[in-house]
Amino acid sequence: MKLDLILAADALRPPLTGIGRYTYELAKRLGQHEEIARLRYFSMGQWVENPVAALNQPVADNAPVATPERKTLRDHLSSNRVAVRVFAALTPALFGWRLRGNKGAIYHSPNYIVPPFSGKTVSTVHDLSHLLHPEFHPQARVDYLRLALDASLARTDQVITVSETVRQEMLAHGLMSADRIQAIHLAADSAYRPHTQEMLAPSMQALGLQAQQYSLFVGTVEPRKNVARLIQAYRQLSPALRQAYPLVVAGGKGWNSEDIHAELTSAEAEGWLRYLSFIDQRWLPALYAGARLMAYPSLYEGFGLPIVEAMASGTPVLTSNASCMPEVAGGAAYLVNPRDVDDIRHGLEHCLSDEAWQADARTKGLARAAQLSWDRCARETIEVYKKLV
Image (cartoon, rainbow, N blue to C red; front, side, top):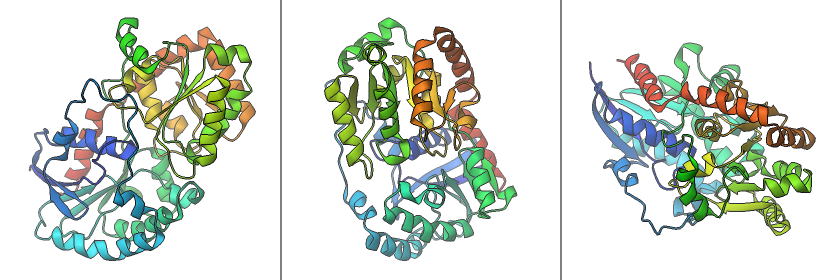
Protein backbone atom coordinates (compact mmCIF):
# COMPACT_ATOMS: atom_id res chain seq x y z
CA MET A 1 0.00 0.00 0.00
CA LYS A 2 1.46 3.32 -1.06
CA LEU A 3 1.40 6.22 1.36
CA ASP A 4 -0.34 9.60 1.20
CA LEU A 5 1.95 11.90 3.17
CA ILE A 6 1.61 15.47 4.41
CA LEU A 7 4.91 16.95 5.58
CA ALA A 8 5.02 20.05 7.78
CA ALA A 9 7.37 22.45 6.01
CA ASP A 10 7.62 25.38 8.42
CA ALA A 11 11.37 24.78 8.89
CA LEU A 12 12.06 24.83 5.13
CA ARG A 13 13.23 28.41 4.85
CA PRO A 14 16.70 29.78 4.23
CA PRO A 15 19.19 29.73 5.73
CA LEU A 16 18.78 26.07 6.70
CA THR A 17 19.98 25.18 10.17
CA GLY A 18 19.57 21.87 12.03
CA ILE A 19 15.82 21.15 11.84
CA GLY A 20 15.59 22.80 8.44
CA ARG A 21 18.43 20.63 7.12
CA TYR A 22 16.73 17.49 8.48
CA THR A 23 13.41 18.44 6.89
CA TYR A 24 15.08 19.27 3.58
CA GLU A 25 17.06 16.02 3.33
CA LEU A 26 14.00 13.99 4.30
CA ALA A 27 11.71 15.79 1.86
CA LYS A 28 14.09 15.30 -1.07
CA ARG A 29 14.05 11.55 -0.57
CA LEU A 30 10.40 11.08 0.39
CA GLY A 31 9.29 12.88 -2.76
CA GLN A 32 11.18 10.36 -4.91
CA HIS A 33 10.45 7.19 -2.95
CA GLU A 34 8.39 4.48 -4.63
CA GLU A 35 6.33 3.86 -1.49
CA ILE A 36 5.09 7.48 -1.30
CA ALA A 37 2.10 7.88 -3.61
CA ARG A 38 1.61 11.57 -2.84
CA LEU A 39 3.62 14.13 -0.88
CA ARG A 40 2.07 17.46 0.09
CA TYR A 41 3.45 20.32 2.17
CA PHE A 42 1.72 22.26 4.94
CA SER A 43 3.37 25.29 6.55
CA MET A 44 2.06 27.62 9.25
CA GLY A 45 -1.56 26.81 8.48
CA GLN A 46 -1.22 26.97 4.69
CA TRP A 47 -0.88 24.43 1.91
CA VAL A 48 2.30 25.28 -0.01
CA GLU A 49 3.89 24.23 -3.27
CA ASN A 50 7.10 22.20 -3.15
CA PRO A 51 9.44 24.33 -0.98
CA VAL A 52 12.39 22.02 -1.70
CA ALA A 53 12.54 23.22 -5.29
CA ALA A 54 12.87 26.82 -4.12
CA LEU A 55 15.77 25.87 -1.84
CA ASN A 56 17.53 24.11 -4.72
CA GLN A 57 18.05 27.34 -6.65
CA PRO A 58 21.77 27.85 -7.45
CA VAL A 59 23.72 30.47 -5.53
CA ALA A 60 25.25 33.23 -7.62
CA ASP A 61 29.02 33.10 -7.95
CA ASN A 62 29.32 36.60 -6.54
CA ALA A 63 27.15 35.86 -3.48
CA PRO A 64 28.81 36.87 -0.18
CA VAL A 65 30.68 34.28 1.87
CA ALA A 66 28.74 35.14 5.00
CA THR A 67 24.94 35.25 4.79
CA PRO A 68 23.45 38.43 6.28
CA GLU A 69 21.24 37.74 9.28
CA ARG A 70 17.64 38.82 8.65
CA LYS A 71 14.98 38.63 11.33
CA THR A 72 11.46 38.01 10.04
CA LEU A 73 8.23 39.04 11.75
CA ARG A 74 7.87 35.41 12.79
CA ASP A 75 11.30 35.55 14.46
CA HIS A 76 10.37 38.66 16.41
CA LEU A 77 7.00 37.30 17.49
CA SER A 78 8.57 34.01 18.63
CA SER A 79 10.49 35.90 21.33
CA ASN A 80 7.35 37.57 22.69
CA ARG A 81 5.76 35.62 25.54
CA VAL A 82 2.28 37.03 24.94
CA ALA A 83 2.48 36.30 21.21
CA VAL A 84 3.52 32.67 21.67
CA ARG A 85 0.75 32.07 24.21
CA VAL A 86 -1.82 33.44 21.76
CA PHE A 87 -0.26 31.34 18.97
CA ALA A 88 -0.36 28.18 21.11
CA ALA A 89 -4.00 28.82 22.04
CA LEU A 90 -5.39 29.70 18.62
CA THR A 91 -3.43 27.81 15.97
CA PRO A 92 -4.29 24.16 16.78
CA ALA A 93 -7.96 24.63 15.91
CA LEU A 94 -7.16 26.77 12.85
CA PHE A 95 -4.53 24.38 11.50
CA GLY A 96 -6.75 21.38 12.23
CA TRP A 97 -9.62 22.99 10.30
CA ARG A 98 -7.41 23.60 7.28
CA LEU A 99 -6.18 19.99 7.39
CA ARG A 100 -9.71 18.55 7.48
CA GLY A 101 -10.73 15.87 5.01
CA ASN A 102 -7.43 13.94 4.99
CA LYS A 103 -8.30 10.97 7.17
CA GLY A 104 -6.48 8.53 4.87
CA ALA A 105 -3.20 10.48 4.98
CA ILE A 106 -0.26 10.53 7.38
CA TYR A 107 0.79 13.89 8.80
CA HIS A 108 4.47 14.18 9.80
CA SER A 109 5.81 17.18 11.67
CA PRO A 110 9.63 17.18 11.52
CA ASN A 111 9.56 20.08 14.01
CA TYR A 112 7.87 18.79 17.19
CA ILE A 113 4.27 20.03 16.98
CA VAL A 114 1.37 18.07 15.42
CA PRO A 115 -1.95 19.93 15.02
CA PRO A 116 -5.35 18.20 15.33
CA PHE A 117 -5.60 15.75 12.42
CA SER A 118 -8.11 13.06 11.51
CA GLY A 119 -5.52 10.67 10.04
CA LYS A 120 -2.37 9.11 11.48
CA THR A 121 0.38 11.32 12.85
CA VAL A 122 4.17 11.30 13.33
CA SER A 123 6.27 13.86 15.17
CA THR A 124 10.05 14.29 15.27
CA VAL A 125 11.31 15.45 18.67
CA HIS A 126 14.85 16.77 18.33
CA ASP A 127 15.64 17.38 21.99
CA LEU A 128 14.07 18.13 25.37
CA SER A 129 16.20 21.14 26.22
CA HIS A 130 13.13 23.18 27.16
CA LEU A 131 12.56 20.68 30.01
CA LEU A 132 16.14 19.76 30.90
CA HIS A 133 17.86 23.11 30.30
CA PRO A 134 15.32 25.93 30.07
CA GLU A 135 18.14 28.38 30.79
CA PHE A 136 19.39 27.80 27.23
CA HIS A 137 16.30 29.38 25.61
CA PRO A 138 14.28 32.59 25.59
CA GLN A 139 11.44 32.22 28.07
CA ALA A 140 8.94 32.59 25.22
CA ARG A 141 10.24 29.43 23.53
CA VAL A 142 10.10 27.51 26.80
CA ASP A 143 6.54 28.74 27.37
CA TYR A 144 5.48 27.65 23.89
CA LEU A 145 6.92 24.13 24.07
CA ARG A 146 5.55 23.58 27.56
CA LEU A 147 2.12 24.69 26.37
CA ALA A 148 2.14 22.94 23.00
CA LEU A 149 4.23 19.78 23.25
CA ASP A 150 2.13 17.77 25.70
CA ALA A 151 -1.03 18.43 23.68
CA SER A 152 0.85 17.57 20.48
CA LEU A 153 2.12 14.27 21.86
CA ALA A 154 -1.40 13.36 22.97
CA ARG A 155 -2.50 13.44 19.32
CA THR A 156 0.68 11.83 17.93
CA ASP A 157 0.70 8.13 17.01
CA GLN A 158 4.47 7.67 16.59
CA VAL A 159 7.44 9.80 17.67
CA ILE A 160 10.84 9.85 16.01
CA THR A 161 13.80 11.06 18.05
CA VAL A 162 17.10 11.90 16.40
CA SER A 163 19.15 9.95 18.96
CA GLU A 164 18.69 7.17 21.48
CA THR A 165 19.66 9.69 24.14
CA VAL A 166 16.58 11.81 23.43
CA ARG A 167 14.44 8.66 23.27
CA GLN A 168 15.58 7.71 26.76
CA GLU A 169 14.93 11.26 27.98
CA MET A 170 11.36 11.02 26.71
CA LEU A 171 10.87 7.69 28.45
CA ALA A 172 12.37 9.02 31.69
CA HIS A 173 9.86 11.89 31.65
CA GLY A 174 6.95 9.58 30.84
CA LEU A 175 6.10 11.46 27.65
CA MET A 176 5.32 8.39 25.51
CA SER A 177 5.38 4.61 25.76
CA ALA A 178 8.49 2.84 24.47
CA ASP A 179 6.68 1.11 21.59
CA ARG A 180 5.67 4.50 20.16
CA ILE A 181 9.16 6.08 20.05
CA GLN A 182 11.93 5.20 17.61
CA ALA A 183 15.39 6.76 17.38
CA ILE A 184 16.57 7.48 13.83
CA HIS A 185 19.98 9.08 13.43
CA LEU A 186 20.65 12.01 11.14
CA ALA A 187 23.56 12.10 8.69
CA ALA A 188 25.94 14.26 6.69
CA ASP A 189 25.22 15.23 3.11
CA SER A 190 27.44 13.66 0.44
CA ALA A 191 29.00 17.11 -0.12
CA TYR A 192 30.87 16.57 3.15
CA ARG A 193 33.89 14.48 2.16
CA PRO A 194 37.69 14.71 2.25
CA HIS A 195 39.10 17.35 -0.11
CA THR A 196 42.40 17.45 -1.95
CA GLN A 197 44.52 20.58 -1.78
CA GLU A 198 43.32 21.47 -5.28
CA MET A 199 39.70 21.15 -4.19
CA LEU A 200 40.32 23.29 -1.12
CA ALA A 201 42.27 26.08 -2.78
CA PRO A 202 39.38 28.25 -4.15
CA SER A 203 37.42 28.12 -0.88
CA MET A 204 40.46 28.73 1.30
CA GLN A 205 41.29 31.79 -0.79
CA ALA A 206 37.70 33.08 -0.62
CA LEU A 207 37.55 32.53 3.14
CA GLY A 208 41.05 33.85 3.81
CA LEU A 209 42.21 30.63 5.49
CA GLN A 210 45.07 28.14 5.19
CA ALA A 211 44.17 24.45 4.91
CA GLN A 212 45.02 22.37 8.00
CA GLN A 213 46.07 25.53 9.84
CA TYR A 214 42.96 26.32 11.88
CA SER A 215 40.55 24.79 14.36
CA LEU A 216 36.85 25.11 13.65
CA PHE A 217 33.58 25.55 15.48
CA VAL A 218 30.33 25.50 13.46
CA GLY A 219 27.04 26.34 15.13
CA THR A 220 24.78 29.11 16.34
CA VAL A 221 26.59 31.36 18.79
CA GLU A 222 24.52 30.98 21.96
CA PRO A 223 25.06 29.77 25.56
CA ARG A 224 24.07 26.13 24.87
CA LYS A 225 26.90 25.74 22.35
CA ASN A 226 29.48 26.60 25.03
CA VAL A 227 31.50 28.94 22.79
CA ALA A 228 32.50 31.08 25.79
CA ARG A 229 34.32 28.16 27.48
CA LEU A 230 35.88 27.16 24.17
CA ILE A 231 37.32 30.67 23.83
CA GLN A 232 38.55 30.59 27.43
CA ALA A 233 40.26 27.24 26.85
CA TYR A 234 41.80 28.44 23.60
CA ARG A 235 43.14 31.56 25.30
CA GLN A 236 45.03 29.28 27.72
CA LEU A 237 46.87 27.45 24.95
CA SER A 238 50.47 28.42 24.31
CA PRO A 239 50.88 31.44 22.00
CA ALA A 240 52.75 29.21 19.54
CA LEU A 241 49.85 26.74 19.29
CA ARG A 242 47.27 29.52 18.93
CA GLN A 243 49.41 31.15 16.26
CA ALA A 244 49.82 27.89 14.35
CA TYR A 245 46.12 26.93 14.60
CA PRO A 246 43.83 29.93 15.17
CA LEU A 247 40.21 29.24 16.05
CA VAL A 248 37.56 29.88 13.38
CA VAL A 249 33.97 30.32 14.60
CA ALA A 250 31.24 30.00 11.94
CA GLY A 251 27.69 30.58 13.07
CA GLY A 252 24.90 33.12 13.26
CA LYS A 253 24.11 35.21 16.29
CA GLY A 254 21.84 33.34 18.66
CA TRP A 255 19.87 34.19 21.76
CA ASN A 256 21.60 35.85 24.73
CA SER A 257 24.97 35.95 22.97
CA GLU A 258 26.08 39.55 23.52
CA ASP A 259 28.76 38.59 26.06
CA ILE A 260 29.99 35.78 23.81
CA HIS A 261 30.29 38.15 20.87
CA ALA A 262 32.30 40.53 23.05
CA GLU A 263 34.69 37.65 23.72
CA LEU A 264 34.85 36.87 20.00
CA THR A 265 35.71 40.47 19.24
CA SER A 266 38.39 40.53 21.94
CA ALA A 267 39.99 37.30 20.69
CA GLU A 268 39.92 38.57 17.10
CA ALA A 269 41.77 41.70 18.24
CA GLU A 270 44.38 39.46 19.87
CA GLY A 271 44.92 37.79 16.50
CA TRP A 272 44.13 34.14 17.22
CA LEU A 273 40.40 33.93 16.36
CA ARG A 274 38.35 34.56 13.23
CA TYR A 275 34.59 35.01 13.36
CA LEU A 276 32.87 34.23 10.05
CA SER A 277 29.20 34.59 11.11
CA PHE A 278 26.73 32.35 9.22
CA ILE A 279 28.51 30.71 6.26
CA ASP A 280 26.64 29.95 3.05
CA GLN A 281 26.11 26.23 2.46
CA ARG A 282 28.34 26.18 -0.64
CA TRP A 283 31.41 27.01 1.49
CA LEU A 284 30.77 24.67 4.41
CA PRO A 285 32.16 21.39 2.97
CA ALA A 286 35.55 22.96 2.27
CA LEU A 287 35.52 24.83 5.58
CA TYR A 288 35.10 21.51 7.40
CA ALA A 289 37.56 19.60 5.22
CA GLY A 290 40.24 22.28 5.55
CA ALA A 291 40.27 22.28 9.37
CA ARG A 292 42.85 20.48 11.46
CA LEU A 293 40.28 20.00 14.23
CA MET A 294 36.55 20.44 14.75
CA ALA A 295 36.04 21.67 18.34
CA TYR A 296 32.43 21.20 19.43
CA PRO A 297 32.15 21.14 23.25
CA SER A 298 28.39 21.80 23.34
CA LEU A 299 26.56 21.52 26.66
CA TYR A 300 23.49 19.75 25.27
CA GLU A 301 22.38 18.42 21.88
CA GLY A 302 19.64 16.27 20.46
CA PHE A 303 22.04 15.02 17.81
CA GLY A 304 24.89 17.43 16.99
CA LEU A 305 24.98 17.37 13.19
CA PRO A 306 28.34 19.25 12.90
CA ILE A 307 30.06 16.28 14.56
CA VAL A 308 29.07 13.94 11.72
CA GLU A 309 29.63 16.55 9.02
CA ALA A 310 33.20 17.05 10.25
CA MET A 311 33.88 13.31 10.46
CA ALA A 312 32.53 12.77 6.95
CA SER A 313 34.95 15.49 5.81
CA GLY A 314 37.91 13.62 7.27
CA THR A 315 38.35 16.17 10.05
CA PRO A 316 39.19 14.99 13.59
CA VAL A 317 36.63 15.98 16.23
CA LEU A 318 36.77 17.08 19.85
CA THR A 319 33.35 17.10 21.48
CA SER A 320 31.57 16.71 24.81
CA ASN A 321 31.23 13.65 27.01
CA ALA A 322 27.67 14.81 27.82
CA SER A 323 24.18 14.39 26.34
CA CYS A 324 24.09 12.57 22.97
CA MET A 325 27.59 13.51 21.80
CA PRO A 326 29.30 10.20 22.75
CA GLU A 327 26.47 8.29 21.02
CA VAL A 328 26.79 10.31 17.83
CA ALA A 329 30.60 10.23 17.80
CA GLY A 330 30.54 6.46 18.18
CA GLY A 331 34.03 6.22 19.68
CA ALA A 332 35.66 8.30 16.94
CA ALA A 333 36.05 11.65 18.76
CA TYR A 334 38.08 12.99 21.68
CA LEU A 335 35.62 13.61 24.54
CA VAL A 336 35.93 16.37 27.15
CA ASN A 337 33.90 17.64 30.09
CA PRO A 338 32.23 20.68 28.50
CA ARG A 339 31.94 22.51 31.82
CA ASP A 340 35.66 22.15 32.66
CA VAL A 341 37.79 24.73 30.85
CA ASP A 342 41.01 22.94 31.84
CA ASP A 343 39.75 19.68 30.38
CA ILE A 344 38.81 21.42 27.13
CA ARG A 345 42.25 23.09 27.01
CA HIS A 346 44.03 19.78 27.60
CA GLY A 347 41.94 18.16 24.86
CA LEU A 348 42.74 20.95 22.41
CA GLU A 349 46.47 20.63 23.12
CA HIS A 350 46.37 16.87 22.61
CA CYS A 351 44.24 16.93 19.47
CA LEU A 352 46.21 19.70 17.76
CA SER A 353 49.66 18.36 18.65
CA ASP A 354 49.41 14.57 18.44
CA GLU A 355 49.91 13.42 14.83
CA ALA A 356 49.18 9.79 15.65
CA TRP A 357 45.84 10.73 17.22
CA GLN A 358 45.05 12.92 14.22
CA ALA A 359 45.54 10.04 11.77
CA ASP A 360 43.56 7.60 13.91
CA ALA A 361 40.72 10.09 14.42
CA ARG A 362 40.42 10.69 10.68
CA THR A 363 40.14 6.98 9.96
CA LYS A 364 37.64 6.31 12.75
CA GLY A 365 35.63 9.43 11.91
CA LEU A 366 35.22 8.50 8.27
CA ALA A 367 34.13 4.99 9.27
CA ARG A 368 31.60 6.35 11.76
CA ALA A 369 30.16 8.86 9.28
CA ALA A 370 29.81 6.10 6.68
CA GLN A 371 27.45 4.27 9.06
CA LEU A 372 25.02 7.20 8.87
CA SER A 373 23.21 8.33 5.73
CA TRP A 374 20.17 10.40 4.79
CA ASP A 375 18.97 7.54 2.57
CA ARG A 376 18.93 5.27 5.62
CA CYS A 377 17.18 8.01 7.62
CA ALA A 378 14.45 8.24 4.98
CA ARG A 379 14.04 4.45 4.75
CA GLU A 380 13.68 4.07 8.51
CA THR A 381 11.24 7.00 8.60
CA ILE A 382 9.07 5.28 5.96
CA GLU A 383 9.09 2.15 8.12
CA VAL A 384 7.59 4.24 10.92
CA TYR A 385 4.86 5.44 8.52
CA LYS A 386 4.12 1.85 7.50
CA LYS A 387 3.42 0.90 11.11
CA LEU A 388 0.41 3.19 10.95
CA VAL A 389 -1.41 1.82 7.87
